[in-house]
Length: 430
Image 1 (cartoon, rainbow, N blue to C red):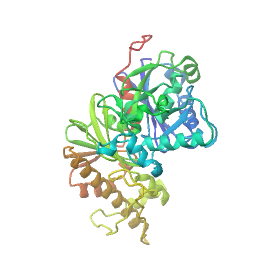
Image 2: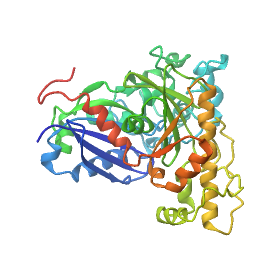
Image 3: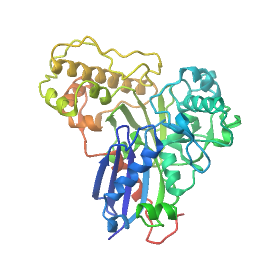
Image 4: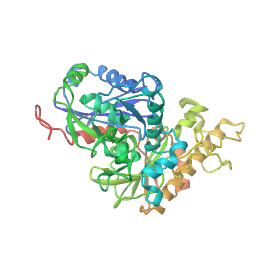
């Protein structure tokens, strides 16, 4: 069998795996929920193992390279050998967990007090979560060196049996400066800074799968491990956007991304370097995940068919899942607005979708205010890309073409990134 490239997406609601061949053609796509809690790193590892076990052994033996994406900002503490701590400290703080008590310190350490924008500043960045984790560790008397690792970086470390590394896009919200290649502000001078990862650009070949992991997974021991990116960036890579295109991810959260000529900076805004290009955007805490609080996926599809996008409900809902927002405004105290609820479930669903659309419109406006060119077309991925009525609501509000691309998954984007780093069989990584 000719070599295959594997992409793994660690999403909010589960894992998705994609295999493509050397020509870039899809070979296999699988998904599964997390075997345990989302915050439990063991469920990320066990989910990967479960997905690979569903692939025939000859196919697994043909995997020549792989890359992983993860939710941007999901952070944990671990020991230098990757071992998890005891109790609650063995769980990650998820990307949507704001830490307002650490906001001022995070802003100061990131150097943002003087007006220098930083994705690590404020309550919603990984730096604030890191400070909370470190404080909790100190309160429990935890001793010895501890590492701070994001979701994709921890699982990459498990594959390598080496947890030294971190991909730069996953660490922007921890304070990594991709422009200068250093940690921002005074982060590198802190007593805990030895626990920060060594940063590699997205697409770097980090090494090969460790022999004992390769034997456990049934993949070749010379399978290359490629530094991935965040889940939203991976989805963008899958769409291959052209000039003037923006990408909206309608997943559990709402994410906006577009390629720009030069980096943007602002509260709640991230700017990543992906495949040598600058990719700017932001992620709201709101998204399709809030719909599941009220309706099943099947009911959303049924009720959506009753929606008339040309007849607005007149309701002004703000469908946040809980208190706090990070983009288009960075406000940890912003409250959801989920009422009034009409008697008609279809009208209520429409009002929620309208509220999400308002956030999307504000997000594109925010990126323009920071210097991004206006988008002329929106490509949509994620679960919400299956909903034609939502597409119509968004196109009406945005005033530009909106195209749904539901088959462009983050896992596919990672497989495409990995494929570009595939070497001949038996070759060592550069």
